[in-house]
Length: 313
Image 1 (tube, rainbow, N blue to C red):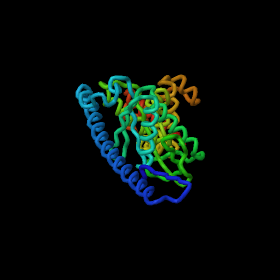
Image 2: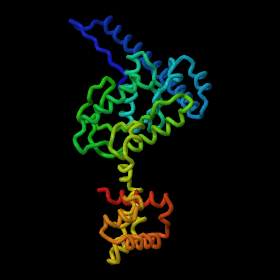
Image 3: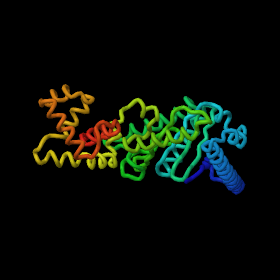
C-alpha cells in the first residue's frame, strides 16, 4: 500500500539539475517514510505493552511505561473498542480514529491484536465520535438486507477512508465493532469483556457497531436466535412435542400459558379453556416427561426461554 506521493509540475521540461533535485527529494522522502514506519512499529509495541498491563490490573505500571505519550488518556474515563475485519478495514478504522483524535488534540491508544484492533479512547471524545460516524457511513451505504455478517462472509460494504470519504464500489470491506461502557483504568479488564460481548452481538445482529449500553436497555429475546440456543431449546422441548403429536393433550400450549400467567392456575386454565385440575395434571405430566421440577425457578426460566426461542422465525 503506497505511503505517499510526490507530484512535480513545471511549465517546461525538467533539466538535469531539476531531475537530480527531484530524485534527491524522493530519496529523502523515502528515508523519512521508512523512519516513520519504524517509529510507528515501536509505538505499536509500546501501546501493546501498556494495554497488557492495564488488562492485567497494573494501571500504575502502565502509566510509568507510557509516560506522557498518551496525554492523560489513562487517567480519564475512556471507552474500549474491539474491531474485527479485513486488514484494510482495520487499517482504515485505525486511521479514522487517530485522525479524529488528532484534530481535537486528543490521544487514542490504538493496538493491532492479530486479526483485531483494540482501541482506548476518551469517553465522549473525538475518536469515539469518529467511530460512530464511521459505522453510520458504512451502514448507510449498505443495501437493505446486506448487513454485515460474520467476518469473512460475503456482503457488499463500501470502504470508508480516514477522512470519511467512501471507497470505490469495488472495494468490499467488512468490519464489526464492539464498544464498552465508560470505564477507568482500574476496570480495563471489565471494559474488554464488555467490548467483546458487544462485538459478539454486533456479529449476530448484522451491525457494524454495538455499544455495551444497548445490551442492557434492549431485550434478551433477539439473542435467542443464536443457533446454539435454538438447538438447546428444540432438544429441551422435543419430548413434549412428541407427546402432543400422539393427541394425548396439548402440553406445550399448556406450559406456555401456565408460565405466561406466572403459575396462576385459574388464570392459565381460563386462558386455555380447561378446568384447573386438568391443567394441574398436564403440568405434572410435563415434570414426569422432562424429569424436572417446575418448582425450580431455573427450570421455569429455561423452559420459558426455550418456548420463546422456538417461536421465533
